[in-house]
Each structure stands twice: as structure tokens, then as C-alpha cells.
Amino acid sequence: MPRRPLKRRFFAPLLLAPLLGACSGTQLVDALTPRSGYTVATDLPFADPPYPDAPRLRLDLYRPDRPAPGAPTVVFFYGGNWESGDKGMYRFVAQALTSRGYSVAIPDYRLYPRVRYPEFLRDAAAAVAWVRRHAAEHGVQPGPVAVMGHSAGAYNALMLALDRRWLAERGLDPARDLVAAVGLAGPYDFLPLQSDMLKDLFGPVEQRPDTQPVEHVTAPLPPLFLATGTADDTVLPRNSRNLAARARDAGGAVRMVEYEGMGHVRIVAALAAPLRWLGPVLDDVDMFLRSLPKTGS
Image (cartoon, rainbow, N blue to C red; front, top):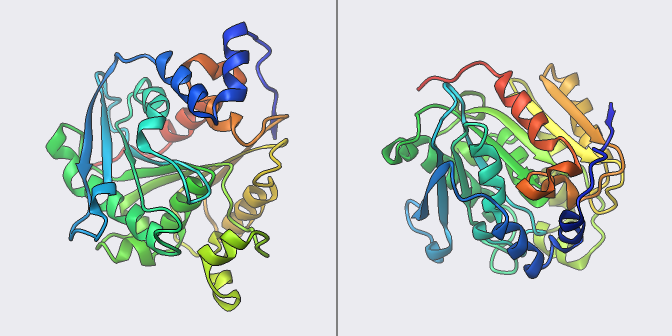
């Protein structure tokens, strides 16, 4: 059911919202994001064995000062069309989630044109495996993790949750090792490809159906939270609707939220402390994660 955007308006956030995708906007949001309430260990290498460009394969691990008992660790994958992005730009996401008691890992992954499908999924799986096996060494409570992402990062998260191949390469099973998957404005059913870049990224025509998350929905599934904005003209809402329908048909537990009038960038911008008036995205994600069974080791 569509959600109404909040009506509160502040002059500074109005200036920040359209700038979020630019470097200056990101820096402003970062400057207004609280630096208390958590500790962070930066640039932790997660590639094992090392990849040729292992220096990029590092993550930042945020630990809340007041962890919520039994809460999963959230591994967040950022978007950027699989060709841009940096973990340092998403401290605002980590702050949002740690403020609710979740530990958060934000990994970098290799980008196009350096790599093509499915290598960025292998990087994402390596990050999850590292968190599953080593985060406790950094003071994070052990147990299953939840994967989460925005845009291309939501694709990465949902592919790990649905296509067992990538976590299996790391000795993990999404049904056992993932407690949930959260996707914000993710592309899950986006054939035919339009841009030359995406055609090169995802390979030959005959291979492309295998790259679509909707083609890998089989039971058992981890619980899914899928959110989209009705004004998103970058990744159309039908992506989330189609995946939600397919997962429900397979007997999966799905929560689907559509934010009325919200666009592609604002759905993740709403997680930032100075921009939460844009919509209740943090509250909805938190409510979903709190509704899950408490995790153990």
C-alpha cells in the first residue's frame, strides 16, 4: 500500500536533497550525520583468497554503542549502476541503522569496466562470508546476517538471497546464513537491456535471463523487504512488484512498501539523519528487521 510522504519541511534539507547524488551534496549530508553512538573499524580486507585487485575489497564495520539484543548484522551494498560508488559515502546509512541497534558492514566491490557479471556478486558473497565468520572478532554479536542494498546494491543483495550459487561458493546457504534481505529501489526484472553499458556488463543475450533475480525464486527463501517509490523513473516500481509476486507465489514471506511520490535517490536519502522527513524508510526497515526471529550463532 502506498505510504504518504511526511509533510515536515526544513530549508537546509531542501537544499541537500537534490544534491545528494553529487559530491558536494554527499559531503554536506556526511557533515550533518552524527558521529556518536557507534564505533567503526575501517578498511578491513575481506577477500580470501586475495583477488588481483584486493585493495578495493575492503569493508567498514560499524558497531552500535547500544546493540539491540539478537539483532542481525546488516551488510549494506550501495548502488551506482555497478560502475561507481565508495563505502565512505554511505556512513549516513550506517549511522541510521546503528541508531536502531544494528551492526553494519559496508563493503566496496569491484566495478565495471574492471569486472562484469557475475564477479561483483562474488565480491558481495565474499563480504557476507567474512562478516559471518569474522565480525565477532571485532566485537559484533555472532549470528546470521541480513543483506540490504539500494539500486544496483539491492540487486546484489537480492541475488545473494535468491541465487544460491554465490554464497555456496563461500560455503554458505542463504536459507541458513541470511536472516533477511532488504531491497530499496532495486532492479530485479529489467530485461530487455537498453544501454550498451548494461549489455556489456551482463553478457550475451542468451545468458541474460540467468542474471535476473526473478528467475531464481525458489523455496526456501529468507524473508524479503522490498521498497520502491511510485515516482521512480530510474528503476521502475514494477521490478519490486514482480519480485514480490514471484516470491509470494513460492511461499516466501514478503513485505512490499511503495512510497507515494518518492523517486530513486530519495528512498535512500531518507535514511540520512537530516533528511528523514522525506519518508519513513528507516522506521519501516527497522520494523521489518525487528519482526524477524531473534538470531543465534
